[in-house]
Length: 356
Image (cartoon, rainbow, N blue to C red; front, side, top):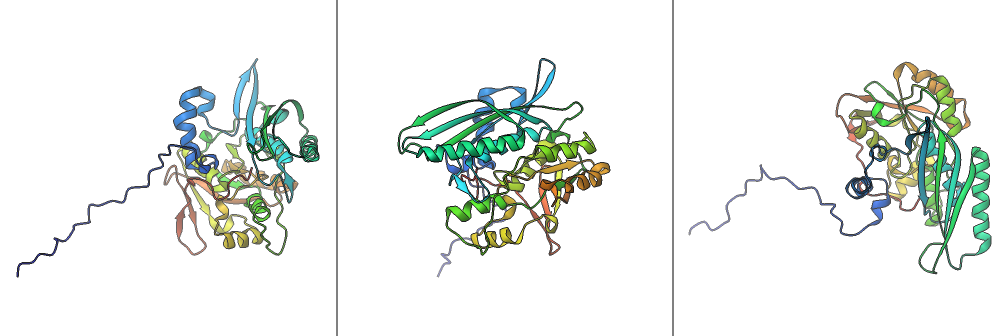
C-alpha cells in the first residue's frame, strides 16, 4: 500500500513569537512599573507631551528656573489597605515624593497634596491619614505648602487616593542620572529588599509568617546627603519601588547602554521576606520597596560611600551587589549561588498590584 502518512516537518527554521502586549484597554499591569508601564509612557504620554525633561524618564525632573537648579516630581498613591504595618497611605505619599526628589540629589523643600475622597468614608479615617502626612513631613523637614480636595460618589473610589508633588534644590556639582553610568561603576543597595511589598500583601491577604513584617517606608533625603558629603560625583540613584530592584536596574541599564552584573547572594533579602516570597511564589527582586535606594558609584569612591552609608540609620545594611559592565549592554544578569547565571528581566506588569 502507498505511504499516506504526512511528510515530516522541518522545524529547524521555526521560531516561537513573543506574546503580543497590544492592549486595547488599560490593565492593572500598566501601573506596575514594568514593561507595560514603559510602553504606556513611551507610546502615549511622551509623544503627546514632548519635551526634553520628560524624555529623561527619571524619578524626578532636574530643571533650571531663574538660574537655580531644581528637582520636580509628582506621584499618586492608591495603596490598599490604607493602613499597614509600619505605615499608611499618608506617610507613604510624603516619603515617596521626598525620595523621588532625593534621587536627583535634591533636598525636598515643598510638597503639594491632593486628596481624592470617596463619599461615605469616615471623617476620623481622613484625619488619621492627614496626621500621618503631617508627621512624615516634619520628619523629612519638608513643608506641605498647597493642596486640593475632591470627592467622588460612593463606589467610584476606594476610600482615599492621594497625589503629592514636590520641589527641591539640587546642590552645585551634583548630576545624578542613569546616562552617567559607565562600566566599572559599583552597584550598592542601601539595605534589605522586598519588605514593603510583603508587608502590604501579608495584611491584604491575612497571611501570617510567624513574625509581623513592617514596611520600610522612610524618607531617604538624609541618607543621600550623607553620600553626597563623601563625593558629589555619584553617577545615578534610584529608589526601587514598583517592579522592585529588578525594574530599577533594568531601567538604568537601558538608559545607560551598559550591562549590569549582580552577585545574587550579595543582594540582602531578610529571611522573613525570603520565606514569604517562597510561600507566595514571588521573586524578592521584583517586590516593591519604599525606604531603599540603589546607587551607581565610581569605583574609586565606592568604599568611602559604602562606609558613610553604614553610619546612617537608613543605610546600616548597605551592601555592594554588583557592577556596571561592558558585556550584555542594556541587560541585567545575576550570578547565582550555584555558579550559574540568569537574566533578571524587566517585569511585564507587577507581582503585587496597588502597593503604593
